[in-house]
Length: 164
Image (cartoon, rainbow, N blue to C red):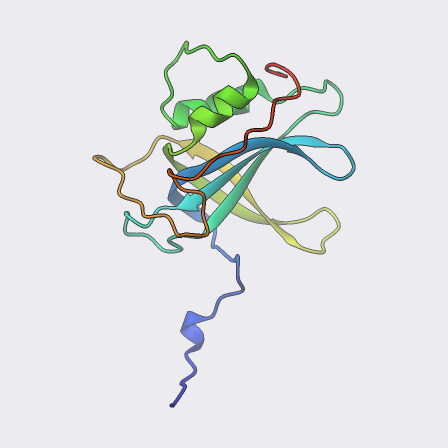
């Protein structure tokens, strides 16, 4: 069997170019680094029901707790909720309830790759959250390795109610 090289198809694994992408939220949860810095992580998947590059690639968006206040940036969380078209004025019993409501919602995100502070690796950062540009039913098909709508999500209890 012959194997032909085609460098136009090369990829460095998680590499995704700067730009705007239609995404679906695979999961959202609160987590912490080994050093104890707390953050919200949103696992976004580039939708495969929209004609765009990097379909099925994951983008991990983070919202960090401020060290000075111990709270998340409320404006950032509200921008994400608005982009995901949650209902303005909706009430949630906990931060995790809100994050659970993010799941399976769609948005358009703008990303930019930036070197880490130590210069050892590249971070893909979500710079902007907007409402989706697509209309109609979402027909994204999740890969078996992804959580998708039929798999259980994190059942962890939030550390506190709305830390912002």
